[in-house]
Amino acid sequence: MRLRLLLLALGTFAVGTDSMVMAGILGLISRDLDVSVPTAGQMVTVFALAYALLAPVLATLTARWPRRQLLLTALTVFTAANALSALAPTYPLLLATRVLAAAGAALYTPTANAVATSLVPPERRGRALATVLGGMTVATALGVPLGTWIGRTDWRLTMWLVVALGAAALAGQALLLRELPGTPGAPWARAAGGSAGAAPGAGAAQGAGVAAGLRAAVGAPGAGAGAAAGPRAAGGPAAGTQGAAAAPSAGAGATPGAASSVGTPTTQPRQPTPPGLRERLTPLRDRRVVAATATTFLFFLAFNSVYIYIATAIRPATGGEAGRLSMVMLVMGIASVAGSWLGGRAVDHWGVRSVMLTGSAVTALAFLSLPWLGRTMPGALLYALVTPVAGWSVSVALPHRLASLDPPNAPLLISLNSSALYLGMAAGGGAGSASIALLGDRWFPLTATLLALLATATVLTTTRTPDRSYDRSYDRAATAG
Image (cartoon, rainbow, N blue to C red; front, side, top):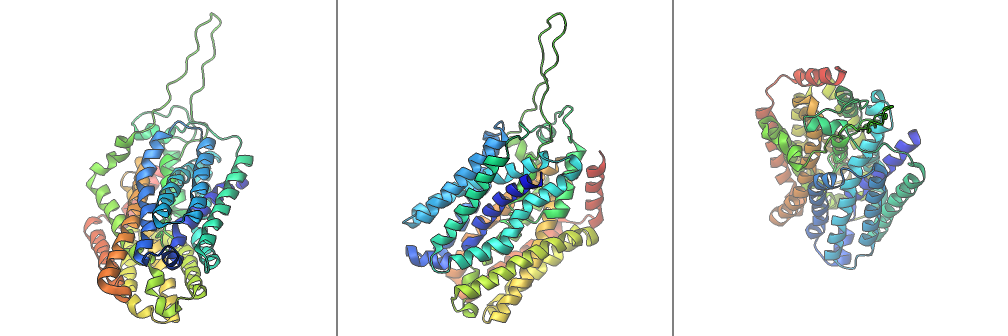
């Protein structure tokens, strides 16, 4: 069982590396394809935007596909797209391959998390999510610096690394993930207001799995988060928690009734209908949900407007040397893991609001200091240590806040957080590019400072409920079953 989870985590490791490693090779791409660094940075924007927009669409279109088929299809698309990225002769073609890679990632990550929760008993779902989402976290600590180092002379080698990771995950899952539960049921039934029948793990048990997963592994930037990820840039969480939105119950589905002795036709209970896009967006009618997703968007907009162009910001410290940049990326990755771990415990101890306010304020201060810290290697390493710790702490608190607003619908709310994260990541590429054009290579992080302060102000004005009420309401729902 654990081998299966590790194979799923290998896939999220490949996705996380692909979505975050671009920050370390933008300079090489810009020189090779004869475009500016801000223009090259739009690859991150295109990937994140495509992920955010395609994830709910693909989830709806493939709702009735067998999960094994979904996993293998997603990894095939993802791996082939990265191979095309490595071979792309022009910048427009490279952008097109990034959209295709995002489609594969958007299909894979939610499905992998859904499969993880169906492979284990309800009481172990949190740990299963932690294992799979851990692939995103490890990508920030290992995949990004490794990819940056491998591509120090040729960025295409970095893309081939991602291809190898995707191919390994595809081969392993094709061989070893033979028997998987079929059609998801319980969360969809809850989202549509229906009943999941007798599917094991329905209702509150599903919430328990999500709750444990949040405490164990949510963070994840990314891009993401992404995620789930931390910021996706420093790792961003992000992107990883979206899988909770589709988390299934083991054994979900209908069992045909037995034929009677007089030949009465057998009957089969009606399968719960997967939610359409309208049902998935229904929580946005709640102003509290809108405020929470807006906070997620603003924070990741601020974070990624700097991270995507971190090589430009610290060029005076690194002198343009790939080895020094790889060292900075490694420190950021390790700090991201530490921030995720510390963030979960800080939320439990001090509450969501305190963690969000403290983390976003520290992040704003780090952005404000970067024009000076980026001049020397010790300063750059200090920035690489402090910023991901603060950022990942906030990235843990953000989905926790959303899930606490309506615990029975926590999976859908967490998926909205993931979409806001990737939209912020996408907008961050454009915001960083515009800031460089207006303020120059040294001072562009000041724009991120203002955005981070705006996120802090949003938290101040929209979270007036005492901190612990979030935790108590969520915990009651998660343990009710």
